[in-house]
Length: 220
Image (cartoon, rainbow, N blue to C red; front, side):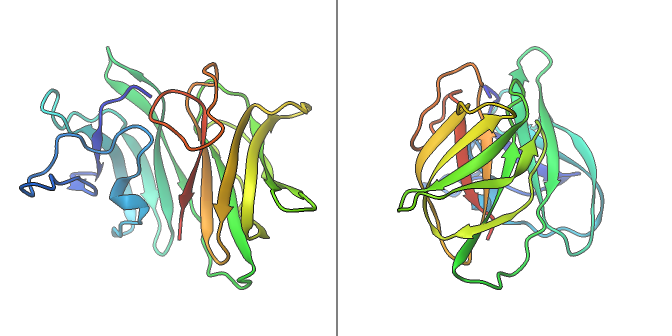
């Protein structure tokens, strides 16, 4: 939250950038808060140890690394890199973490596969629930409780339209909600909790503000 737009790097290799649609020159906007690099697609790199980071895209502090994280990328595996938490405008740093995406080809095309990632630095561990909007309104727990910088297990649920919510352990009160989210059969999704837990939520589509949000991204 509140971080400038960035381009993503693996060591010195630029993995994502946005070009200006008018003249094809690289834009100074980069990937903004709430956005995804490369349109949400995976980028292929050789296995090995990397420092992944977001570097400021704007002219001011151009190419300053603000979220370095050293991690090992293994052959044949998929990963997602997240910038998270609150941007420190003095130190010009922000949290980052990596989770593995153990995506496998679907064997049942009547279901969608969903997992939960917790990217809210000031929120307690919580569980994601998906309630089908069609009778009998069945509610599914998407994996188990997940702490900040954690990812739950991919869970298969019937394809359909769902109302999403998260709850803290032992609580029947929703901490976050989002309505009318579609999960298409044969697809794999990550639902990410982001924002400032003290700021009132938006129940429908996620905005670019610091409001809490359950952001739905297709892995494949």
